[in-house]
Length: 224
Image (cartoon, rainbow, N blue to C red):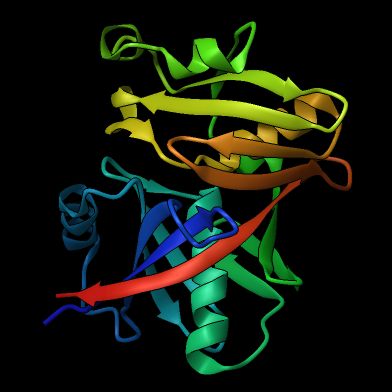
C-alpha cells in the first residue's frame, strides 16, 4: 500500500488555492522508477515527490512525463513536509543534482536553487492583468511551457501570471515556482506573483547564478 500525502503550496494568506503536490515516503526504495513515473502521471498533479532518505533529506521529483532535477513548489512542499512531519528544522534538501538550500521566513517556506537546474520556460508579457485573465483555452493550448504575465503594480513588484505547459503534461499550472524564479532573475528584483486562480508566489534573485522562491504551505489530506 502506497500512501501519498497531499500539500498545497503557494496558497494565499487565507490558506486557499495553491498548487497540490504529492509526497510519498519510500525509504527502502520499494517503488522503482517506472512505478514512480506511473504514479506521477496518474496523480493529476504537476509533480510528485518521493522521499528517499530522512538523514540526508534526499528526494526525487517526478513530473507527469519524467524525473526532473527541480520544481519550485515540489521543493518548497517537501521542505515544509519534512520539517512539520518530523519536527526538526532543516537547512537543505538533496536533489538528484545536489543540495537545495531551504529555510523559513516567518510563515513562509523558502528554497534556493541554481538557475541551471530550472526548466527553460518561455515568457509572454501582456499589457495588463485583464489580458492575462481572459486568455481562452484555444489560445493557451498551443503555448509550449509558457508563462504569460503582466504587471499589476511595477513599483511594488506585483505581477499577475498564468502558466501553460501542455507539452509537459500540464495544461495549466496553478502555481509555477521555477518559472517565477527565472522571471525574478530576468527582472533583477524581488517580486510577488498572483498566479493561477489565486495562488501567491514570492521570488527573488539570489547570489550569482541562483534564485529563491517562497510561499505558504498547507497540508490537505492523504490518499492511498
